[in-house]
Length: 494
Image (cartoon, rainbow, N blue to C red):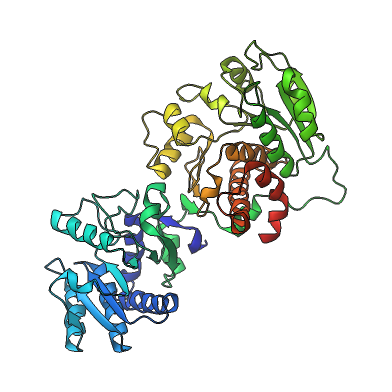
C-alpha cells in the first residue's frame, strides 16, 4: 500500500488517527510532528521570511498553526497570531497559552496581519461541514482581498474536505500543505482555484493503521509508477504488427474530418500494431495523406456526410474507438454495442446514447470518456461537480469504465474503484485534445491492457506529454496535432 496514492475522506482520516491514538500515540505527539514538519516546509519554501501572520481556528488545525507560530517565534521571526473564534479546544488552548508564555504576540484585530510577508491559514481543517459564519466569511473575504501570500494547513479554510465544495467562501491559498494523507476534496476541479500548489507532508502514520482502516482503498491518486504499469512498454523480441494489437477507429464526418485524423494520430502514438479507419468515403483520401500507415474502410454515408453503415466487421479488431466527429449515429452505436469487442466511446457516440442506464452492461468491456457536459446528459441526476462520487456511481450503474475528463480527470470502474489524475495543464483546453486521448486510450486497450490500466496509463501519458510541451511552447502552444506527435518521445520523461 502506497500512502502517496491514497485519497481519504475526513471520516477515514479520523479513523486512521483514532487507530493510532488508541494504541498509545498521544494526540499532542502527532500535533507536534505535524507542526514541526509544517515549519520546516514553510522555511524551505519561503527562504528569507521575516513577518508571519498566523490565523488560528478553534480546533486541532488551529493547534497545528500554533506549533508553527511557536517554532517561527523561537527562530527569531516576527510572528503575530490572530484568534477570531472562541472557545478553543483544550489542546489548542494549551498551545496558545504556551505561545504567549514564551513571548509570542496575539493581536486583537486581523488588520494587524496585513503587513505580513506570509499568512498561515490554520482556521479550519478537514472537519468543516457547514458554511462559515458571517463574521468568518467576512474575515476570509478580507484576507483574499489583500492579495498576500497564504499557505493553508491541510486544506484552505472554507472548503469541504470530501467534495471540495466552497462553504460560502474560502481562503485562496498560494500553497496548501496536506497533512498525513491526501484529502479527496483537493482533487475536485472546483477546489483548484483555492488550493494553489498542493504538497503532502508525510507524518509517519503507521502502515498498520492504513491497512486496518483502508484494507481495500477505493479512491486513489495516479502516480507515475502506477501509470507506467498501464502502458505496454515491454514487448517480446519476436513481436510483429499482428501480435501487438489491432484497433478500429470509427470516427469523422464531412463536417468534422479533423476529429477522425486526431483520433487516428492518437492511436498511432500508442504503438498499436494496426490502425483501421472506418470513415465516410468522402473524407478517406484527405486522411490518407496525413495518416498513410492506417488501413482505410470507406463507409457509405448519409447526405449530411455521416457514416450510414460500417464497411468492416468490428470483430476483426481487438478494440474499437468510436465517436470523435461522428455526428449523431444512434443506430451505428447500438450495432457496435452488440458486438463482442471492447469499445471506447466518446463525443458523437456519447451523444447518440441518450440517458445512460445499464445499457453498457456488455459481455465485452466499455470505456466512456465524457467531459462534464456530456456526463450531465448521460447521467442527468448526478452532479458533475462532485466528480469523484458521481463518476463512481455512473460506472457502477452503467457497467462501463468512466473517464470523466477535466482538470483532474477521474477514472471509475464498475467495481467502485476511483483513480484521479493529479496533474494536468490548461494547455489541453483545445478542441481536439480529447480526440487524441480517445485514440491513445483505445490503442493501449487494443494491445491487451485491461480497461482500467489502459485508462490510467493513457490519461496520465496524455496530460504528462502536454505538461512537458507547455514548458517550452507555453499553454497556448499545445495544439492537438503537436501533442499527438510528441506523445512517443514524452515517454523519456517518465
